[in-house]
Structures are given as structure tokens and as C-alpha cells.
Length: 473
Ligand code: SAH
Ligand code: SF4
Ligand code: F3S
Image 1 (spheres, protein in one colour):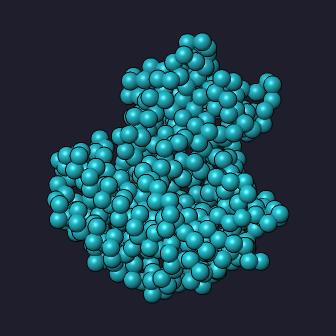
Image 2 (cartoon, protein in one colour):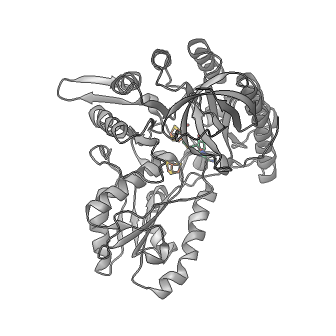
Image 3 (cartoon, rainbow, N blue to C red):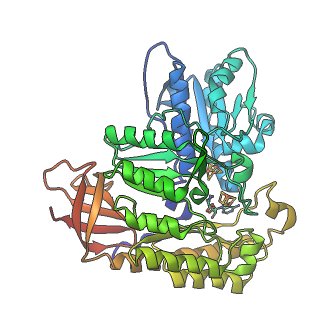
């Protein structure tokens, strides 16, 4: 094996770099919005909805902050450092605002929802606050600012899914797209702000999801990722015929309606992932055999304190079901938290031993960060010292690297169906794509444009993060 690169958790999650909305619909007269997005895929999907709403009202977007009339940051509040990054970013806008006092600065997303008007008090540069369910109101909020006011909407809805809004695809390679299928979360894991920042769980109309997937396929997209904080609790009732649709049925409908569209989904909650979902995955070639199944901890006392509502044994039973129904090659990834309140050394060892039992392909790993207002902050003590959290996190990261290498080794010598997404970042002489089980594959080009095509690649080498191969058809 070569190239054992140490990847930080933030890098792994792609959270270290904001995504900047590219220039769209440039016209000399329209007001220009500059939008930066942070956080999870749901936030990136939301930025596509925001752009659609604003462009509908005649705004254009720019990727050059110097040209902007309005700067919007779509923010994340999941850990303290995510919020700190936004506060630092706001500081960096000061010279711009000094030069052009008419420039508007707006905060969207989870940090806006968590801090509400407090953010206006704390960060004087901010003019606008809009929570994740308030994006239809953005044009009005922007008008309010033109009259010299500050504007706030942090109302959380029980119904809003933005189902009828056609997202403007941003940051896209034209091959994969994000499709939001639900919003909010009802789970109340004790460490987590999401239920407070995104509100109650609600599922999007099945027909609007199918329509969006159809349109994407027609536009040339070949892969969709169905998104929700907890996709397995998708539940939509058709009020015309009173029929309900669960996640397994939704997956089946999407798979049947576009057999050449690859389907991924994220995130699954271990308490909800059913055998019905696993059998549906097995039944359709176009549903990728890859499951993101956050564990958070391998110890039952900690899982209970986290209010995850499953035990280590339950979690391992779900892994067994995945292996039984989908086989050893199904990709499995995790989220794990190091140093949650009162976690002992033995309990941390339980997390490592869970990892040893599962041997995950991939993982997103974090040190516990106390979030104001969450049950853990109110009832438990954040008493694991920072150095201990860091050391435990490093042990988890090191073990994951070994397991990623272990899993990748099994792919060497096999032939994999790869969807080509573009050129390798490191070399324009190589294609870049992903396997069904979500592994990155790089292989030499052979004078053909293959972007958006499915090809068979023989895997010849691997690193812990990448498979290397050769085209065989
Ligand atoms: N809905 C998904 C996770 C959403 S948040 C699920 O339930 O699995 C993404 C990940 O961030 C979580 O899985 C968790 O590992 C991590 N996370 C959430 N809150 C955190 C906190 N306060 N400190 C550290 N990590 C946290
Ligand atoms: Fe947060 Fe838990 Fe909901 Fe995931 S399931 S978003 S961790 S409360
Ligand atoms: Fe962050 Fe909100 Fe997503 S807190 S992780 S952007 S749901």
C-alpha cells in the first residue's frame, strides 16, 4: 500500500472548505448575490433552493465577492468550530463593508436559526438572518433591508419541504445531484443541535421527488443522492388516496422510474434501517450498495446518555443483516464521536472494538463539542479534557485508516462498474469516478470522453483512500 495520507475529520466531511456559488444569470442590471455554503449536504442542497428562489426574483449570482451587492453565508452549527469559522469569515468582510456600506451581509441556515437575533447583536456587520425554513421569504427580507432595516425570519415550519422548487444545480459536475427527500429531525440525540436548527421532521411529496429525478436524468445526470437527516423515517401520505409511502417504497419507486440512474442515500439511523430497505437495495442494480450508518459510540452506557435509542448489540445485528442481505462488499461508513460526557477509557475502547468488529470502509470522526441548549449541555458535564478527546479521536482515525486500507485491498483484482465523474484532481491524464460501494477510482484516459458514463474498471492497486485501475471495455 502507498500514500497513507492522514485525513482530518473536517477534510473527510468536506467541511473544511466552503462552497462558493458560481456566477449564474449575469445581467448588468440585476442585483448580485455572493453565496458561500458550509456544513452538510443538506445545506448544499438548500443553497440550490435559495439560488432558485432568488433568481426567480431577478437576482443573479456571482462568484466574485468584490462584485456582490449581497453576501450570504449558509451556515452550520453542528460543532463550535463550525460557528467560529463563520464568525472569522464575518470579520474578513469588514474592509468590504467599509468601502461599500450598502453591501448587505446575511446569515442563512443552522447558525442563523440557533442564534436568531442574538447574532445581530453579536455581529454588527450582519443585516439579515434567515433560518432553514424561511427561504421563500428571502426576497421580502432583502427588500426590507433596502429600506434601511435589519431583517429576520427564523420561523420553523411543520410543512415546508420546498418540494415545488426546482433547485438551481450548483457546484455540480453534471453527473451527480443532491435530492432532498425530507427535512428536520425528531430524534433528539442529546449532543445534537439539528432538531433545534432544522425543526420537526417532514417528508417531501413522492411525486415531486420522482419528477426531480426524471428531470435530472433528462438533463444528463446519472446519479442522485437522496438526502435527509434520517432517511429511514421517510413517511409520506398521499392525501388523494390516503396511501402511505415509506423509505423502502420510495427507493423502489425511484429505482424503477429511472433504471439507468444510480441512487445513493444518506443518512440512515441504526434504529430505523429495516430489512425491507436492505431487500429493496438488493433487488435493484441501480441502488448503490453503500450505507452510511453512524454509530456515535460502541458503548451502551454512552449510547444511552446520547439518547441514540439502540444498543451496541442492536447496531451489530443491523450490520449482520447488511452483510447477510447485501454481502461483504457492501460499503459501510460511520460517524463516531470521541470523548462524549463522562466517557471512560474502557468505554472508548468499546468504540475501538466496535470498529474492529465492523471494519468500516470509511468514517467521519469528531471530538465531542458541547452545544448550548442541547440535552447534553443541560444535563451532563463536558468533562473529558480536550487532550484526552484529541488523543481518543486520533486513535479512532488511525484505526479507521487501517480498516479503509483493509477493505480497499479486497477490491484489488476485481472488476468494478464505475460512474465517471470527471478528471482526477491530481492529473488530467486520468479519469475519476466511483464504484457502487462508493470508493473513489482513478484510471488512465484512453482518448475517449467518458464523463457521465458507466464503465468497467479492473482494480490493480489501492491506497487507503483511492482505488487505481485500468479500463477494460
Ligand atoms: N443525522 C445524522 C447526523 C447528522 S450530524 C445521524 O443521526 O447520524 C453529523 C454528525 O456530526 C453526527 O453523526 C455526529 O457524529 C456529529 N455530531 C453531531 N453533533 C455533534 C457534537 N455536538 N459534537 C461532535 N460531533 C457531533
Ligand atoms: Fe442529530 Fe440525532 Fe437527528 Fe442525527 S438523528 S440529526 S445526530 S438528533
Ligand atoms: Fe450543520 Fe445544520 Fe447540516 S448544523 S451539519 S448544516 S443540518
